Length: 217
Length: 205
Image (cartoon, rainbow over all chains, first blue to last red; front, side, top):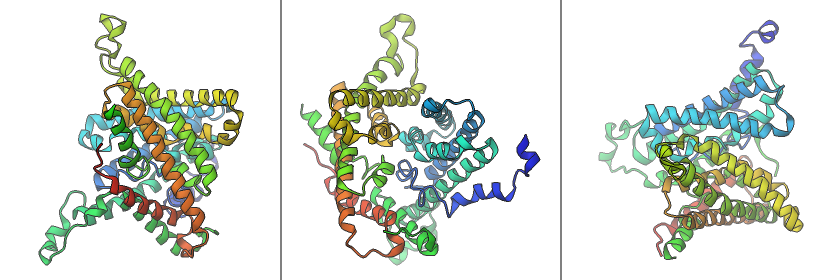
């Protein structure tokens, strides 16, 4: 309640929580969190989108719940409490995916379950939700989930375009008539190693634009 | 026996946790600055995976699967607890990590001191939970196969982190473009190592 009295819901400070993780404080390229489950789902755009949405929901909701209970959670068992909240949310997401988008859920296989151990969620709970009010925490969760999703979608877009010549299943390159000129899909982009190299390139790009992110040694 | 060896080799080289599935990347990137700590964390992962995967296998087989509770009596034959998988697996992993920590502290203080801070961290290492979930998805025939998969995956992870730590130690002497320093080059190196590991694809004993 008192948040609304003190400041509007989308005050500049709150908006910053939402937008900063998209660029300057991106969970993957800057905070180095949550890479584990990020890369294996980026061969095609569709699973990457579904995965991003799932993570956004779980980070947002878990931040909200933990922030709401933060004063009642004993310090010593907080990790277990956090894990229970996260696991419950992930089970909900998993059952939902199985019910409505079964084919994508099969493609994601174990990676939905791995959202539980995704360091973004634990990291944000520890670093933000345990010390802040529910509403800013919720925004922080959504922002970080979206920052994670952004990288996923960018990587998936390029891998699908270069590897299969499609965008979201639509054969763009074929429609452009590129194959007639002798162009061929690059099969290597579909293989796992290229996901890592793409993220490396994204980091390179981001850091050459924003020199303050460059590491000293 | 041949089958066990096959699973073991395959989980180290072909289905390597890092290079094929990117599991445990967070600690892999964070703790790979020098070889010594990398070995410590790697050993802890091997240890914990070797224990958690077979334990989770038994729990899956006798508690969680559809009809798994039939040993309790006729009435339980239809019970399907598989939706609880995530919750139970993560609880088992957290409990075993705690247990392992206590046992190691009691019987081998030297090992405990060298693993020290890494042991508790392992509970949230995706490679461990990933190992259990892959074990569930691949439906291994018996507990020995699950154990050999757990051990193999752990060793594969150890190999990967020691390899990258060794390379990153040498990288100090190379002239990397500024924006690529640190994280960026680590990603690209991992990608190149993964390409090398793809040479093992299709190996069958």
